Length: 212
Image 1: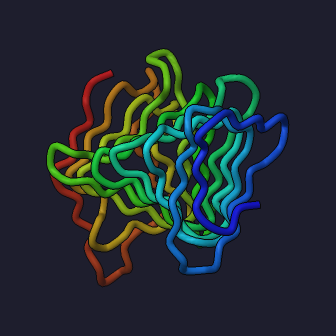
Image 2: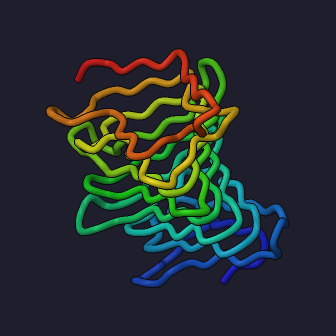
């Protein structure tokens, strides 16, 4: 269990264990994973920023509390075998040039009370994609999604699935986005509930749904 900064300058041997981050709530820390591959990582509290090296996870990330920020860096989630999950009950921020690269058949699950924020800037988009051109992954939201200047690629047939009870951030409301390389016969976005109140208007602009 780590309660502060974490820097891997050598070789981390995770075996089948979980690396746990449990810092003082609201405190800011860095996570430099080095060049090792981790089995499972759990964030219980504290606000962490990924630095220096890309993060490679064989199986699961449990973001139970606090936050993880990724900018000009990447998370590689899943080894493409079995069931690998990114479960978000805290907050995941992908900012300028931040990337989330999913293994084949892996899952992004934004739980009720959780937030995934894909907010980059022009020409420096936040990106969610698969690790390989032949892989797809699941992306479901029960909590909140914020997105602007972002790209989402290689979703499975359900697309970005906004389930009943989910919300779209009012300011970063999925505008200025690109969707590419979807699954044949599927969809890019599945809206399963009313996302605006009866007296409100949800206006999403400058979104491109590319062929294939």
